[in-house]
Length: 634
Image (cartoon, rainbow, N blue to C red; front, side, top):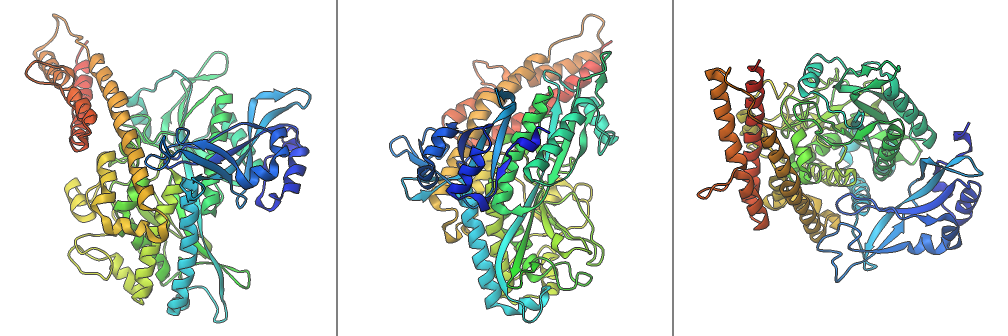
């Protein structure tokens, strides 16, 4: 009954001054207005403007927004201290949502206090649009215009689409959706990694029935999201988690479960805005029920991480009003995709080294991308064993998703993003990479059969677009059928650190050039992004990861006494050597962690990156050795 009285959104059709006044005036529970800009690092602004003041200055607020400075947003090398003017300008072309504080009920109204959050653009010095939303808006706009032009210049492609002879395209647009995975747990509780790993291997949690407060929070979240109009398709348990403990009170403790929520597709910019709002709602509802939510990609080492598989499609609206999927072929039983679909997928694969820095931008993200956890570890696709029988390969970077009964469902699933990826930049970079491949395929006049041969090429075979030394398609399990060395040889070596990933923007200038098309990613924006991500990586490595490894070393204490065996002594000697190498300075030699800190302070990032890889290997060896040592003690 409470929900019936609340305002959840102001759709883009009601963004006139009159309609906004009407909607806010009729809902006293909405007490604040906030303009939400996204900086280059994906951080969103939130300023509480009292609704009375916002309504008084509504015309000015909509036209000129509010002003902040470079210290409030992450825009290095753009909004510096001596050139810091940044305006936050509302975007009228997307839906606006009300964010509710369910812990603050407004007296006299008996409803939670709401804040109308208006997605906005960041404008530097009244000239340059510099935030993440602006980059995606430019990318989606450029893609739409260029795709329409390429189809007009290469009309042969129309014969491969589900279009009649007299059909004409009115507009082209990107469609997108994300699958949000996340962990929930009771605060302060820590799960046993061995129990979690065993439960995962046995698939005891996947798609199981939820219970207790997790069930209540999930159900309330889905109901609330539908009130907002997100049209949730499902919410379910994911593979990770262990069975909670039932207390004598009837409640559950030691909760640690992995969940997923999926919702309806939108246009690219609206999809990214929707996801941002949904994550806040998920956190708020679960917290209200005493549960902590983590959107980290790999919150628990050795256990399944959380992905955010991003689905991307391209549609055209015909002048007749009918929608056509531009990836779907005219005859789905004969061809996997249209030339546009093949070109788009090939563009992502060929240019992925330049796309990846905008997807995998943190230590946490790279921790998830390890073989054996259904997370992609190399640049390869799967499109199915044959055109007439769609299949899914969950071991690849990007897969083709098809429904023979619904051509509009044809799309790509990009499996590398995680819940903390900047979806605005993920979609922007993917759009531009796809456009590069579409242009190449259509300019060469390629039909689906020829493009299938290109995508399926063997190593060493020449191709009109893809690289000679690489393989791009595998219908096999790439974790089981190829060794690490074979994966690197066939599909390219994956970056192991954030620094290695960011370097790709310099090491692959031709691929990075695809992202600069139309000025979407300018040199200034790329340099700003690189500076932001490198600073984040270096700071976290020095101040958090090194500290965590230090704590691990200190937790590995001597436990045996005179009853020990020679095996225990041997194990402890091995552990001692690892502890000292990692964490103990000597006059003649500094330990690994001290050398990492020194390299970061000297900005020798090549050395810091190499030593980070070594640190991860040594810390893993220490954990395994200590576990073996403890198991042998009585």
